[in-house]
Structure formats: C-alpha cells, structure tokens
Length: 385
View 1 (tube, rainbow, N blue to C red):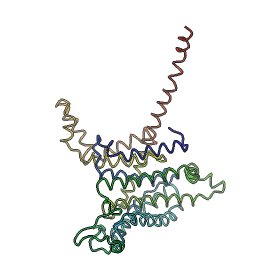
View 2 (tube, rainbow, N blue to C red):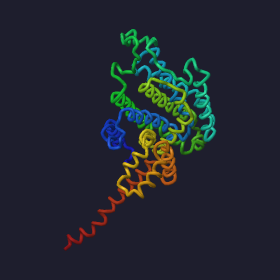
View 3 (cartoon, one colour):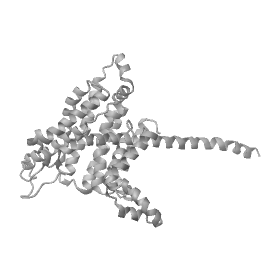
C-alpha cells in the first residue's frame, strides 16, 4: 500500500471523494444505484468512520454506540419540531448533544478497560433504549416514535417566513433544497467526504499517533508517566459526535426517531462493519458499512424466482438443487450470508477486506519488481551478441 505521506494522503482523499460522488454510476451494475440505498451507504459509513476512531485507533471496543445514534436522531427531530426544517441547526445540535452524552458515559466507562469497558457501554446503551422506550415517553413518544407535524411551532421558520401551507407535512431542506432523492444523497455524500477527511487528519496527527500507542501498549505509556485517560476520552467523545451526526442524517432523510435505533443490535452492526472492512484503516469501515447495507437491502429482496432467472443456464436437474441451497442465503436468510462472510474474513483475513487488498498489492508489487531482474540477463546476452 501507499506510504502515509501528505502527497499520498491527498491522492487517497481525492480518489475517495471521486468514488463517492460517482456512486450512481458505478453502483448501477450492482443494482444499488438508487438514492435511498446510497444515502444509507453514506450515513452508516459516517457511523463506522467515527466508531473506527475509538475501536480501530484506540482499541476500545464499545457495544453501546447506537445510544449516540439514537440521541442524534431524537435531537434532530426536536430541532425540526421547535426550530426549523433546515438541516443545519439539526445537525449541529445533534452533534453537540451526542458529544455531551458521550462525555458523560465515556467518563464513567473509561474507568475500566477490556471486556469490562465493553459491558459497561452495552449496559448504558440498553438503559438508554429502555428509557427512550418507556420512561422518557414525553420526550421520545415511546414505541410510536417521534414525528414531525404541521402544527409544530418551528420558530425560526416562522421568523424567516418559511412556514408551510396549512395541512401540509413539512420536509427537511437545506435552504429550500429538498433532502429526498439525489439531492439527499449528495448532501449525505458530501458530509461523508468531510468526515473522511477529518478522520484522515486525526489519524495522521500527533493525537492520532497517541491513540495508536494506547492501542499498542497502554501500560507502557502509563509507566512512562503519560496519562492516557484524557486521550481515550477525547476519542470517545469524537466518536460519539460522529454517531450523533449519522443519527441526525437518518432523521434528515426520514424525519422519524424511534427507540429501535438504540438497540444493542445496531451497536453490534457497526462493530461488524468495522471488522469486516478492516479496523484501524481509513477505507475499511466505509467498505464494511456498504457491504452490510448492500446485503441487508439487496440480498434480502432476492427470492426463488430471481434465483431461477440467475441460474437458468444450468440443466434442470442441477438448477433445482442449486436454487434450493442458494435460497437459504438470500431473502430472509441474508444474515446467514453475512455470518459466513464474517467467519471467512476473520479466519483467513483477520484484518478485514483491507488486509486482502494489502496482500494483493504486495503480490503485484513483488511480481512487478521480479520481472526486470529476470529479463536483465537476456538483455545483456542480446547486447553482447
């Protein structure tokens, strides 16, 4: 792989931005080039990028990051209800609220490390879920979920003259630009590109190097007199802000906030995204998020009719058993496919997809360097002749 120099980082960032903005083109052959799914790729890519700062760089495995995702969603919807349907105040407030919530939880959880830290974050996330589902019903609207309504005050829209017509349900916007369709996708895509750049700068900074040192050997740092807790807490808060941003974008694309976004399954999903793509890498979490969301939304829509069309070139006596076996891994069984992928990657590629990319790159470089050396004697012989 390319060495982490400023020039190579600029090339990496430019390639990443180009690939994200061109998603409607190169995702077309995969059947995933529709705005709603691409928005999910971008939003959960942001979620995974932030989680990677804590887990991939610092080595702290959190099973409770969905709590910050949910807090961001609830804050964004309340911003739409009370302030304005403009997405900028909602995003800013969601990041601040999620960051403050992460500061409180991180301060308590970081008193422990290892599995004890993971269990503490899981406990806080489940408490947050139960509170949102029942105790805080006046704020969260319980199992029904928090929705916007035409009768909400929206004081900023009223001052600026942006009130909607009577009887109409307002929609989120960016100074009049709708957040549905390709407009919503490109807004989320630009936010993800900015998030990737921030993560890149953090990784290459002295602060990022300190986080890597904590992951490598925290005890050795403590023996040298370094207090590692402030660095870990900063990483936890930054990661929480990214999760709050992702939660706000979920509310932007669909102005609804429910307690299900805070469940432990959502926290486990971002862990899978990061591990599948490659924890500690820059591109890995984004790739992992795209893989899981692709399986969840595309593979889950496959049925036996689609499989028969796909394997139609086979003889009937072969096609029938092949379709019967393949049907177990699509439709409602898409999670079985994800489980098999996860096992294969953990066993053969512990570093995730990015480790596979590194191995291929090293193999290509080895073959490329070997060719001139092999061809040199022949060249000398011909010259001498």
